Image (tube, rainbow, N blue to C red; front, side, top):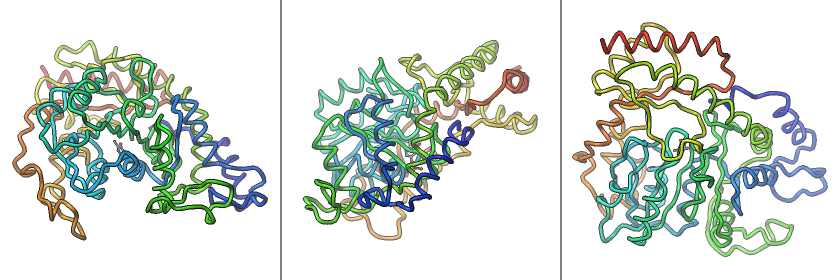
Length: 398
Ligand SMILES: *Cc1c(COP(=O)(O)O)cnc(C)c1O
């Protein structure tokens, strides 16, 4: 959770620029704002870091995913292949767009696999919502091939993968559209915020309008321009964007520290027979936010987590039972509980969500433990943590 670790004078300065002028809105008020355009600056920082031609800041990662779907033309009745291991926001975005989630298998890289996608395709499949989980990219060459062969629209939820690259290219730029989150737990945070990116100018325009009631933002008087499409309010405020600007200027340093600490901890855990690590297709491209490792069996991973708890090892996530990121915890989704009817209630679910057969995903997430990497760790802190972790794991395995 490095972003929140490094909140300091730089963030305060950017926020004060906004507070001193009182221009909290990202559009208009040119005189009042005295040259401060924080949302625009944040978008420029993200374009520079990712190499995206277009970036548009919005109110959250969740609304960025919703915007990515809408901008790419995915909506009512469209079947969208999704992973059973992701933050629930991905699947909520599909459901609230009117789409129908179709669950497919992940592999040990923790993302949808090409085979998993292939096996889930039906004549009605329109798109794949690929989630780059736990800070590193999916196996893009294989996935792009499947999407091309089957004419599927690829949309990337890179909510927890800003700073991840695949063969030199940023996540979020492989599909038609991509989404990042800047919530409090991400590599860079602005409290609440998100970013939409694309290399396609028309899709950018769609996103820009969709996230602000359809305004096309042509000219310099928002409110008096045209509204080519319907939209909604997913705007970011200047206060949030200001924090994001300062955080983006730190991301390369954060990423470097993350990667060094991830490698250090990996070497320490490598001494244990029976512990294996996430096979990342492009290790250089890993953002280093997590060290993901596997125990030989689900039962052993559960025991290790219990031992971690008893010996004071913090910072490890066991998604299989403890977190809101795995399908086993999504009874509301499986039973289509919502406060108001959704398209899926009228159209019917494309799968029997209560009887899904995803043995591979169950087995992989069951064995997985993810250590959240801190950018501010000292070597001494890592040594103490590693020693405790190794002792706990060895106790369970021996
Ligand atoms: C965090 C996250 C989101 C949602 O982002 P918010 O900013 O919290 O709305 C979406 N998808 C993934 C994969 C995430 O990790």
